[in-house]
Amino acid sequence: MFTIMFGIGGFLNNLWWGGNPDELHPITGLSRRDVYAVQRSWSRIYSDPGKYGLMLFIKLFRADPETKSFFKTIRNMGEEELSNSFQFRAHAINLMTSINAAVVSLHQPEVVIILMNKLGESHHKRHVEAKHFEEVKAVLVDILKTELKANQSLIESWGKFVDFIYKHIFEKLCDEPD
View 1 (cartoon, rainbow, N blue to C red):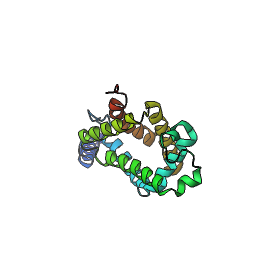
View 2: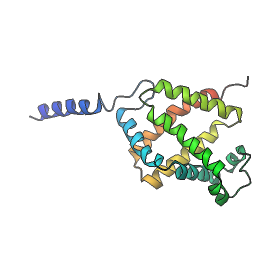
View 3: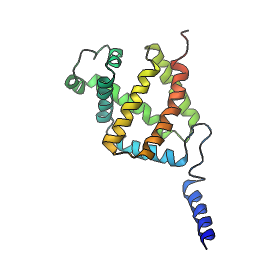
């Protein structure tokens, strides 16, 4: 009886997920469960991109003050001024929109790769380094933990997602100058 139920359960599980939920995608390295977890949690954050984008940048500037120097128009602003700057809020929303494009396009990883290559190229021109992106990852994990009360499984799914997009950002970010 147990074998029959497990077999039916496995069949229903594959039917529900559209395949084995734990099989890793050969390009992204994410399972269907990972994609679901990232997309579901992201929808909560992306429901207010201005708020969370500003939060991400402010926490980034606290963690790594050097990153603020990449932004000429705000490098001398305090946190309150940053929060009230429409120009900077637009940049924060732009960051969130880039992440959103990657999250919602995970079913088309080739598209995500092109988007992230472009992001790497644009940040390469500004002399942003991989270490700055790693700091963004740490801040993002902090936001997931504090704002969403993310468990270890969700953090691991996000880690795989960020590793995937960073791989393709870094392909262009770390290119030698033309």
